[in-house]
Length: 375
Image: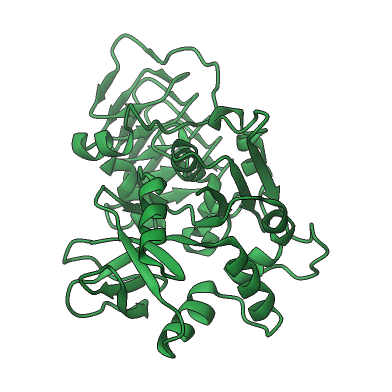
């Protein structure tokens, strides 16, 4: 049995604040050279899914620039297709409010594709997962829907959008809540669902026509309560990085420097692909100091950098100090500048002697293209 893929690129834009003012959450930079969507697409391709639709809503120019024709993910060949599914592309006159309405914009794709099953994914959850195993679990269970979930640590704070479940000994969901931590040993949904394609089409047609727009709340939760849907749970045992908001995004960038987490997410036999840029290697000038950092190519480093994520084409001038920060592509940190606990978006100029001091729980965010003046 085969699956096609649906990726929701805009569902959680509002949770990232100014970082998604000019981009979709799917195109959020991550880990020095990747975007959120790279992980979802790579997992799908590594699992043999080669027909993928990416549903967009607004601010998707940077996403289209990043994806191109999908060649980096092996989606530009004869028997593979990457479809960008913008709003209004099928004559639908409203911008969607939830994922059911978003799927309504993808009906042409769903009707035309051949696989029997659909894998629906958000992009804010980062992991390295084999969807073949999840599909087999779905087929074996005989359930209407399979939710992919994992067991978080006890101190995990439930987000308002979290799909929380408990299961019986057969993996069948026996309790379900959204944004509420259930008793017992709950699993937290990863924004990934498997369902038969024809069943999904019927749900979309039935529910959207009645003004319902959320797959989780309007379909799964309501049908679970009245006992008319069987939900299977596939428990994923690998590392999962959830990017609920700006703070979790900030912390997760540093988690990938952990050797165990990095090895689990960036596997040699299931690589994470991204857009290729032919850049020169980063140049570490005489006298610079770099400690415990992830540094992409094309950078010029003259100053001091500690425990930071440095994206492509960043310049850190002599005498500048960058600590515990994320510096995105094309930014320039002036001589003598002092930065600690900050997220510097793309193409930012930090003037000489400027200071940016945040905290581990409240990082400073500098917007894309801004200039930070010195003293």
